[in-house]
Length: 152
View 1 (cartoon, rainbow, N blue to C red):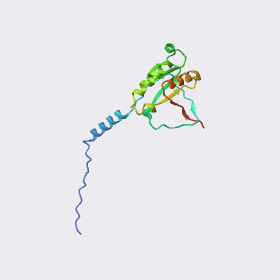
View 2: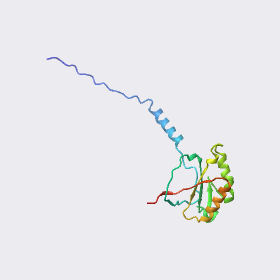
View 3: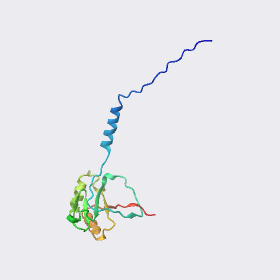
View 4: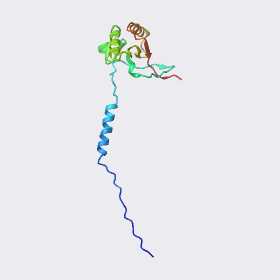
């Protein structure tokens, strides 16, 4: 009989010296790309349910108006208010706000701006009609009403 030599078991070590660099790169990537809530809600929002939904292509052309009862009723009262970005505005300030939003866009995209109105379900049609008239004066003809999931 012949003698067989036992093979030495080789250990394969995985180099871990670059592991902290990779973890920190991932951490920085997610910190940079994560979008936190941009606006602090100053009005109550309970959106109505939709019967038809349509998804928009370019969200960079959308500016949001929030309409509802103020959360701080002691300071702002109980009447529905309009929130644009982080500020409560009146109906007379809508034209100025639309022009400021159009100035943020390039000249080619200014006519394509879409106003998304997120209105509380409890708001009457009177303030909504006033907002629509001001948007017509500001030449913001594309208006979208935001809603939650589709009704079955």
